[in-house]
Amino acid sequence: MKKTSLFIFLTVFTFNAFGWGATGHRAVGYVADQHLSKKARLAIEKILKGQSLAMAGTWMDDIKSDSLYDNTHDWHWVTIQNGETYDQSVKNPKGDLIVTLERLIAELKSKKLNTKQEAEHLKMIVHLIGDIHQPLHVGFGTDQGGNQVKVTWFGGNSNLHRVWDTDMIDGSKLSYTELANAWPKADATRVKSLQQATVRDMAKEAMTFRKQVYSYGDGKLGYDYNYQNFNTVLEQIQKAGIRLAGVLNQIYG
Image (cartoon, rainbow, N blue to C red; front, side, top):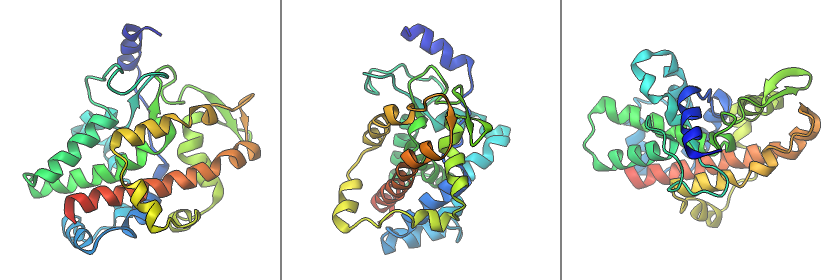
């Protein structure tokens, strides 16, 4: 697809993105809380007025129904075509997942925000770091991050994006705390390594799952697809939480 055509595609269609669903986002926040420094935890508790990172993680999806936040809709995703880097990609003039995360982090580090702005920035970062670890939030621009890939999930109608956002997670019947604890805990060396990743590293990593994600055969998904991919869901949720904590420790620790 030519870049001009890709730009038209991006501006005509709305990307329906609810990364991980409520359970997945809460699991990311729960994991992050376990890796916060004491100083960062105290600062965050004050900013969020006692609300946990787990519960704050869904706020950015909740505000999609509020027209005051219509400008945030495109911040949940980014398009990078196969063989491209983010720098080479066609940029969405409304913003995207990468540039928004980088901006929010920089603005929080500046310490120049008012109380309301700081709380909103923090809740956005909690959510968007979760989003960038859901592979289909880093799309290649022709199927709305899998939303246009119609599949069935155990016989019911779905799409590829929804399978990764919610279907596999909801099918596990795990609470967000159980989901967060379902993958083996990372040791200190692993935590340190994960937290060295930049936002662009996270996006580049998400792109490496494309072949795996799109290996859906005839589109009739169920036990086999779940078996092949659910461990990736669990690991990505853990990575997101650990990296989120690393970012928050840099800002507040």
